[in-house]
Length: 389
Image 1 (tube, rainbow, N blue to C red):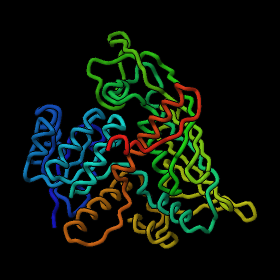
Image 2: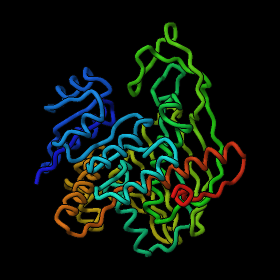
Image 3: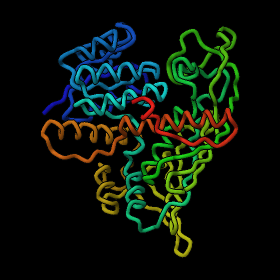
Image 4: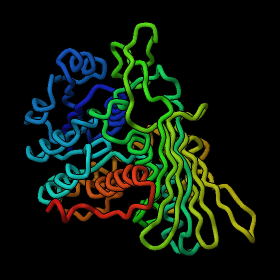
């Protein structure tokens, strides 16, 4: 059965979603909405989509649309997600789920009361070697996890004339680097270990207290001509370091930066269990490094014949035929639409994509990190749902 899909947004996230959706045979992309009819018309024509709308509301209200992909700027996430569920549409939201945990708590409750499939785009869960790492930790063969550490480093905001709408806190939220890319690291490590962050202690900082904003600078990876641009104050962080405590006693540490020269998209983690370490680098995604004390260290390659069944299912080509970021996104969509198909047929289905509740917990952790930096001490996390119930 073909599922008809609409995408809200015209930027980098939307373009990535559209490319992955075109690779799914059971999906038909029927509509696209932008912030204006002109933007929507241009993007729809570029991607071969028949219908274009100048607002998300028009797309959500279109009877032909069964699933909504929310690829809007952060400040629109909550209202688009809520509107889709109100209309009985399945919803896949870009992260963050909303601007703050009050909004995310409300969305979690709405999702639990609805009859639609809802998910959040923490796409790094869906790499074969990430799933392999999880399978190895879940097996218990290496003992309990003692330490999880790593980083997510980029350089696309290194210079004062680098610009993006994420630099404006009214559009993106009170945290930037931690919320934007640190959230991926947090979700990934919690997913692999099965442990939730319970306490945080953070030190975050801003390199550029002001930046040059171009006249037309909303797109990702924009740069401004400093002689003609507006100087804008920046009130969100460029980088940060965070100590973590997990709910079953493990410890962790992460470094997050959008101003690390030469680092383009280096999400890296090491999970140190009692008898082995498991290491993965997103920029070298087809390898998993395994460290041992009393045996030789080794590197496991993405070979379906060598992987756990749940990991092998995410590898679509033989070993040596490299797969990467677009394929992880495609895997997430396969998982999401598998859940929709199972709901329609009444079959049981074990999904692995991030739920609204998962995204709420991550945002609560981000808020705790910001609070910890301000108070200069440890902050214990709560889920925040009871207060909103």
